[in-house]
Image (cartoon, rainbow, N blue to C red; front, side, top):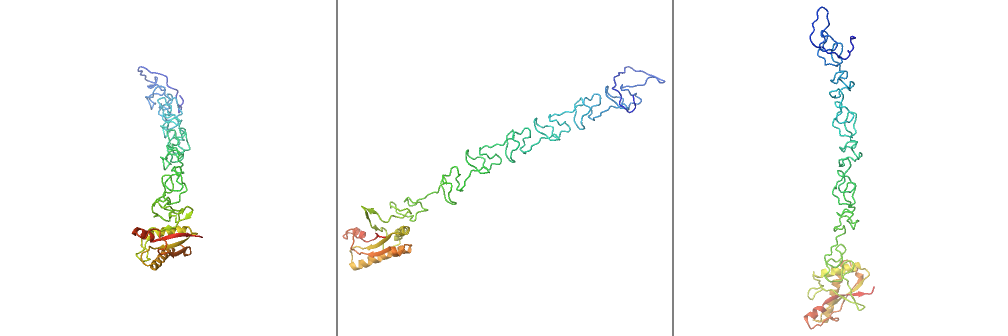
Length: 361
């Protein structure tokens, strides 16, 4: 044996007890080739390589002595089996003991310390991830691909309206488009350019109210209180003149009344006259005669003056409401043009009237 060098593997076996004196053979209880009187490790297992002190050698410091160690070059820190060979429990190529992530799933891509990589941060490891470029924040399935439960092409997790009906057009946040912001989504909106602030129905179109039922919506009706059944023009005001048998008929202003024997209009008259004024303003080419009529009771001269005064009162009211006075002619006919008998109260009531007659332009 050369001092300072490992001995050959001990293959001998000693049996029995021999006692020698005066320079006889030396004792070597563990059969490692180093006599007991010099062996610092007298119980070395059989087959283990030893140093000059008779102690076992463990070159790779893995806890398995050289000789029995079938993997004598194990990297420092690696966990070994009973044969001295390193283990790799998760089969990722990084040895146990060195592997900082010893439970890496099969197939996952790892870094230099044995931990799985997850480039897109979706918690599905690279190598296993079938969709490695998933946007940050998107929900993924078990293979790492983004989910889209409502099928609107905006991934779950990023979708701010995750229950959008199938087929609806959405914005970048996954919410249905409502271009005119009327509360009806574009795909259902049959009036997609509704002006801001307009009240709409379920189809996204303007709600058209017609309070007086004349067929003209309130927002266009210049005469919103037209009596039921009256024919109206395009702005919702009563048609002033009816054509019958080719002749333009005079319009009796039903509801226009005066104080008894006076030309002062009653408050109730305003309802009718406001509508007449609106219609005349909307039709600026129309010229009319305002004719006052009375019954035959009393003196004719008084009735003539009263009928003129009442016609003038109506004219003045219409001018106040915006009708150009040059389009209005006031005349009084007293009792001279009755339309009913003066022998009854009802007939006389019919004769006391104000009429509009259409004049040539």
